Each structure stands twice: as C-alpha cells, then as structure tokens.
Image 1: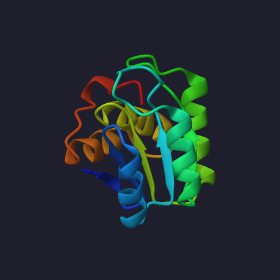
Image 2: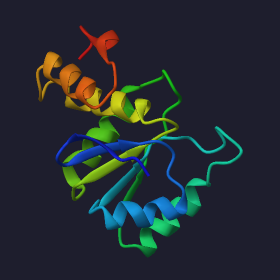
Image 3: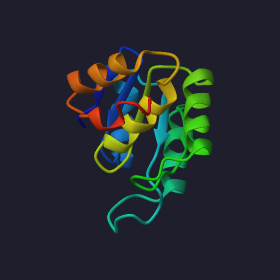
Image 4: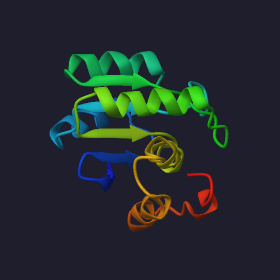
Length: 135
C-alpha cells in the first residue's frame, strides 16, 4: 500500500482494504481517518468493516466522509480535531488520497502559511494550487 507522507506524522493513501490496515499498523501508524463515504464504488469495504478491523488491531479510527469537492466546515473541524486528539502518526484515505490531502490542507489553514501547505502537498505529488487564497 502506498502511504504518502506529507509530514512526519501525517500521510495519505488511496482506498485501504482490510489487509492494508495490517500494513498501516506495521508501518507505525496509530490512527486511521476514513474520508470516503460508503458506497462510492462497489469494490470498497464498508465503513463498519474498516472500523471493526481497526479496533481489532488497536488502531484509533475516525470516519469523516467527504463527497469529492464538497468540503464543509463541519468535516474540516472534525478532521482538525482528529489530528489534534488522535495519536500519530495518522494516515487518512479516500479514493486516491487527494481528498484527504485537501482535508489536511483545510485543517492546517491558520496553523501553517498557505504557501507552505501548498508546497508540502506538492512535494508529496498533490497539486493544491487551486486552494491558493482559500487556505
């Protein structure tokens, strides 16, 4: 599973399967954040299955579903809270990792300069230049 580090304590990934949670634990992640709503694709595991497997592995787990392109304040607040209170390192996932990167960027707004957020994401392969002026 390709975990893409944005910072030493935060990474993103494409859709995680149940076996990928074992890999996440082995890689040292302590918290999983699921940004993908149930039912986006027929082959994705159900959120309840992911939550159950994370609990079996002793991983903290947060379900903060976000429809692509629809980043609301309540989702961003929940994401920021997860980063603040959950033990790191944290890996967040969605279909491709992009949505989770956007969520991280919105959560970091006000804590990091916007240009630093954009540059950090770019080093990891994510273009957030469209967010310039919003973060």
